[in-house]
Image (cartoon, rainbow, N blue to C red; front, side):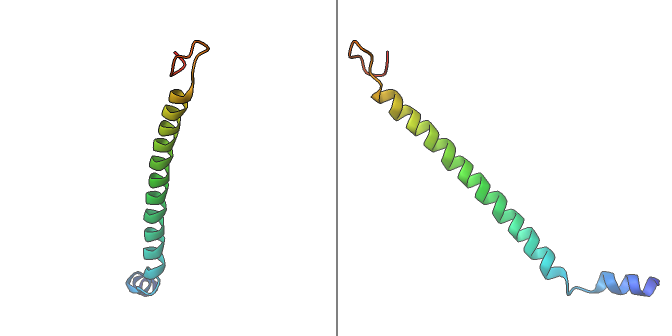
Length: 64
């Protein structure tokens, strides 16, 4: 029984699956981080543009 366990631990045929899983996880985490960064920047920029376009009834720019 101990020989079979030792053989299983030495066998590296299944390592490619684990490596692809780690690679996929790292790529997914990086993609999520990039999308969040772009989203946050876009939301802030659109808010600035919206504030700049708002005008008060007195004609003041910026909703002031």
